[in-house]
Length: 190
Ligand SMILES: [Zn+2]
Image: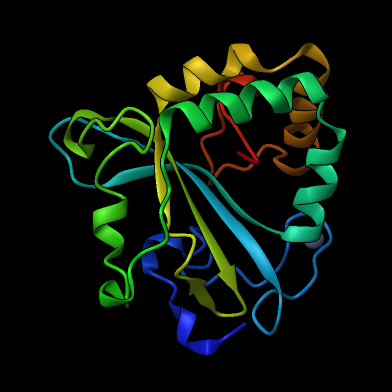
């Protein structure tokens, strides 16, 4: 990967627990900050009138592990999810003039619903990284809970079970984290 296509990882994508960049894959524990490509996902909650956000959960997963889990999804679920996104989202790589990309401009609205962040309380954010840098060609994005609620019914029972097993295995009760009561209320690997 060309180093000019990378920029610093914004602090919003740092690990909540360590307040520094994620260094290990949640699943295989491989070291991320040298030469791995990986995805960071965070579920956040805002409270009206406050600027602070609660972190519901956050993690980084290497591309290899992420693809392995997606391979277990039913074809039906993947087809429906992909159709949903291609209907609602047009992702165009940032033009060269925008580099380094303006992270805030990508995280100030729901990529699906287009609602401004001011109108969103529950949401998930995603970033694609390589080593200790953010990949600019896949800008970070935000998905609001209302979009998530449209996507969840598209997922088959089999796929939902895979997601629930993932939560059970990797998000064991941790007093630092406010896990969703229903794992299936949240989405991963999208
Ligand atoms: Zn991994």
